[in-house]
Image 1 (spheres, one colour):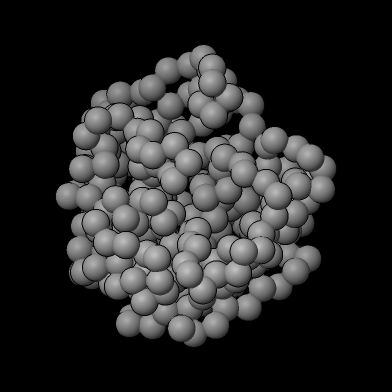
Image 2 (cartoon, helix red, strand yellow; image 1 turned 90 degrees about the horizontal axis):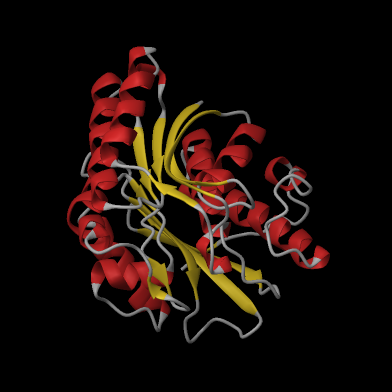
Length: 286
């Protein structure tokens, strides 16, 4: 499997490509990683060094990869944090290029906009670009609950509302692809206080994966989930199988990280969780 992954990069810790690339490689995928930013660490620390790259720089790197003939062998494009609107347009151009070279390739968008704790934390214009141009180009989208509300304007207090919001997002997505939405974090009025839900919708069917809530609040977990879900959706052709595999793996990594008291995901130390999760979680139709 070959995946073009266009996301942020940090030298210290694990977010963006620094969270997505290694799990994909550990599972056996070849990853062509293009970074939208190069930071010393994620911004949650309050200070960092580094630069946001331009859309032209990202586009030039994609062009260079294309000249190696790699796009025809590319099974998927994965995108995450964009940095600025120009990068968003460069990613859309990359998706068009990959689809032209390989019509069977799919595009998985992790629509990074913000979260419940911090609100919108991307630059002006990015949320609107996600809603109006990027999501309509995507085969798979992996928003968190905050991002799903931002993209649809719909509530998710109940499971029925969350399903309605997913269906609304699917209606905007690329018509030729699977139109899969993975809601990576969900707490409805039916979610037990000591649990966290994930919900996937595809083909009019919905599956819920419930996992024990862990005492961690870490950056980068969603980036890893998007990558893991994409990989397993391609391998299995099943949204529910991909949900179970991705959810089980990230739960194992988070559990190991919590036990160690680490502020950063223990991607390397817990890497066996990607290929052989210590706990197998099961999704249920809802």
